[in-house]
Image (cartoon, rainbow, N blue to C red):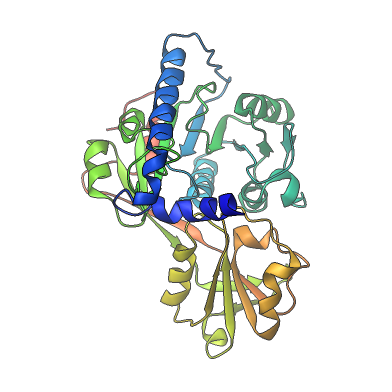
Length: 348
């Protein structure tokens, strides 16, 4: 029980701007992890470990930190723009939170407990083939075999999956930035921040952190906002409602995402007052988790909704969101950068 409590408290400590005393004993493990990360990266550079190139270009959307930072809505944004530009994209994902151990396709009616919550959301929202697997090369190969017309793959996460050759990398940060800037387990970083210099673009889902901006140098950087105004019924029927119709009612809001406060802040911008119920990222809900909602109305993210079917004791609404991106003055837009990379030219 003590170990479980420690694990739950770690993310809060990681995102302090200083190294809290409770993390000091973890520093030797973080140094060991840093050495292993550097060795693994070097083994790929020396070609001691094999890199596989798929027959179509691969766009990796990932992060340097543990936990969600807004990759899923960004993947949907990229896929939508690729389709509008005449490309035929497919999506691959690890399927984090799902129990599946082999590569498999994800359909709109798949079980989130098997394929993961984010891949299921991507399958329902994107309109393109989605495959999951811990081996991203195998997942991409299977997707292309099943959908030979696919001409570009977007990888949801996979920045550290170096066995998969990629055409470009987009790194996402949310408003928490890099926290205390320490590597796991003393901090939230999967790789040192200097790894950012090998990426192709940075997307900020929140206020940029100056230190990271400086490390990014001349890389294209874009600001991302998650836009959502109207709620849809969690039951999946065609009903919808505005925030105005929910004001003055007893509201409960749940969020099992990387930073639950992002969702709560968005609800507050809509003028809603509610009780906050944060859960860990990729939380597997059970009926007892939502028992408090029997005396009011439940509000949730799309990511939570794919796991809560049949568990909600009363009225429940979901807030769908879409990513809206804006480039920095004097820099190319994100999609312009992606197209230029896919077409084999350096960004202007």
